[in-house]
Amino acid sequence: MKRQKIQIPLWILAALGSGILLILAFPTFNLYPLAWFAFVPLLLSLYSMDNRQAFRAGFLFGVVSFFGTTYWIYHSVNHYGSIPFIPSLLLVFALCLYLALYPALFSILFASLIKRSSLPAVLLAPLFWTVCEFARSYVFTGFPWSSLGYSQYSFLAVIQIADITGIYGISFLVMAVNGAIVDAFLLKRRQEEKPLFPAMPTYAGSIALVFFLIFTFAYGFWRLHQDRTSGSVQVAIVQGNIEQDKKWDRSFQNYVIKTYRDLSERAAQTKPDLIVWPESAIPFVFGRDKEMTSEHVAFQKTLDSYLLFGTVLQKDQKQNSYSNGAALLSKDGSLSYIYDKIHLVPFGEYVPLRPLLFFVDKLAYGIGDYVAGNNYIRAVTPFGSFATLICYESVFPGLVRKFYIRGGDFMVTITNDAWFGTTNGPYQHFSIAVFRAVENRKPMVRAANSGISGFIDSNGKISGTTALMTRTVITEKIGLDKTLSFYTKFGDLFSFFCIAFTLLIFFRKNKL
Image (cartoon, rainbow, N blue to C red; front, side, top):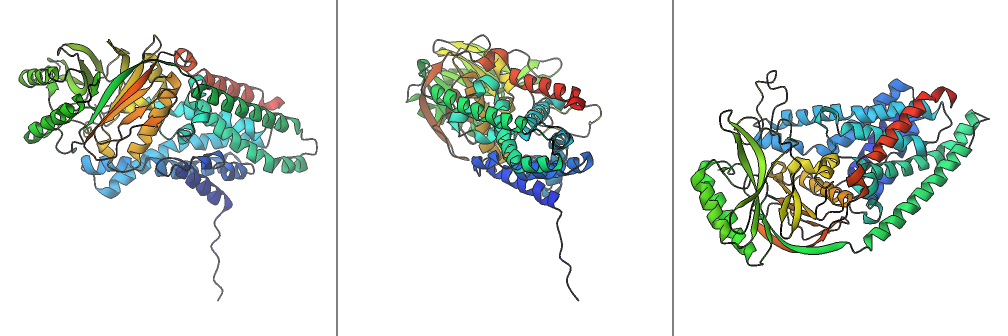
């Protein structure tokens, strides 16, 4: 009796292949060149599909690629949410089922036009992908993680145009190259199926892409060789590496405080202008707990440096409301700046639809839901002005730019990525910060509780990074950059152009 060979449909192989290639383009694999052709199998398979089949292929691709790049979320749910391993993975899988709807929509849009119109893949693929990626960044408060352009964080010559287009312009460019490769495969087939098929749009699209690439590299090399520094500031980062289960345990309060004080005294020996502690560094509510606040200020005065630290802040005593914030103490111990985190993490810092989800609790410090801030303010000091981005905020380009519309010299990110252990999460989070620096032309100081801490200049070049799960201090003199970039000033105009062009295409699709 002959064994029957199991034949896997080509669309499944194409979706899986593209998904796996894309995963490998992101940290920690960092095989970023793969992103420039990762979509080719998927796009080629979509050519022969109807909308239902295209949805299926795009959805499978999305589930695979998103699970491969966001699996690490399970770590916080499993280790700190008291949810067993398998259910925590299923929760992440459920998130990926939602995220996969965006590449599924992209696939429908692409498949519906690539065969019925004369428009080339080099135009359709990047347009539709950018629109879907942009939408994902805003719908349901947004989840812009794993945007295609982030895979290119170390390709400095290419990512310089982000100060014009934002991250979505990088995604557009990478997808356009995928589309051009697909056009090279499909042109002859399209001409055979339609003898009167015009090749000119395909040739024109490819030529336009060549010019776009030339401009991108020329602009990139020009920016990389510019000297835009307008002074410097000496900054020390303290990475306390406080274990997550000890952070808010009162029996470890003295241990946490002593750890940061010892490290800060070490940092002070380098005579920094600014010492930065990570998110929620102090194990008490600054300002409310009077005795510990006084002791903290008294210690800070001995450092002869400004001190920025993450802290829980009480906002309303009657309502017992708190924010996840940052505070800056001047050399003399006076409070010169307070910032309340604006974009909170759903289920991490607050529970959406609390009346309906009364049985769900957030993962962060258990004092009830945090309240969101609403002031895009910068700290103003003798050595420059800066905004403080807290954790998740650094992944939202539209939020970050609002801090710098009226100027600024550098930016600080404080975070606690200990939630994600030694998974890919902390590496991806750090790589995303590169784009905020380039988009706004502001050097970045990044302080993380357990790593990765480090410095990023306004061209996206990384320096002085720390290892994960280490207790250390790093100091660096960073060059200030007062540039007001096009992106900072005008925001996501490029993405809105893509949306408008997409609407125009579908409005005129019967004439194409």
